[in-house]
Image (cartoon, rainbow, N blue to C red; front, side, top):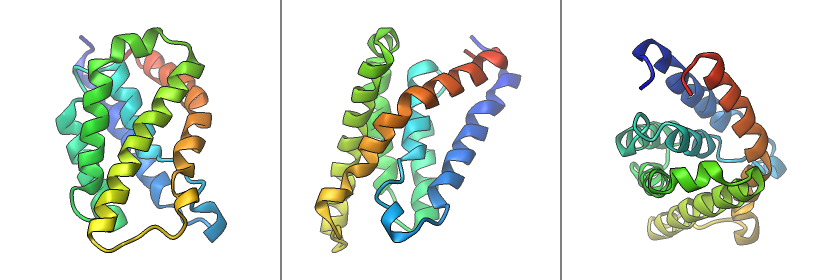
Length: 161
């Protein structure tokens, strides 16, 4: 098991993802913004499932809900479901090629987005453009191989992975 002093990388990457989630974008770019927090959560729950658990996903999701002004628990519930699935399948995920991992990441983030769409519909916040609503999952799928390699190398450099 990794030593405790190396666990500073996990909160650091989550804080960086939270910051990327709130960077202002032009109207045309908001549909292309990947779910940075979701990508980071998926990475840590796959690489270190014994450290980054459902509780960590819940707290991170609540932080994102507060930062974005979303209904409290919306992102938290989505992240819990994503982390549960990834923690159950982390061995298969790690042995898969990066392209296959990217498709799996897109499916996980689509599940989270469907859940968010359902919760937003129940609270009266309908999506502007349903066709573009799911574009962030596709952008995340394209970014996954690079993000995985960069974060894996960061973790190896700190002897966390």
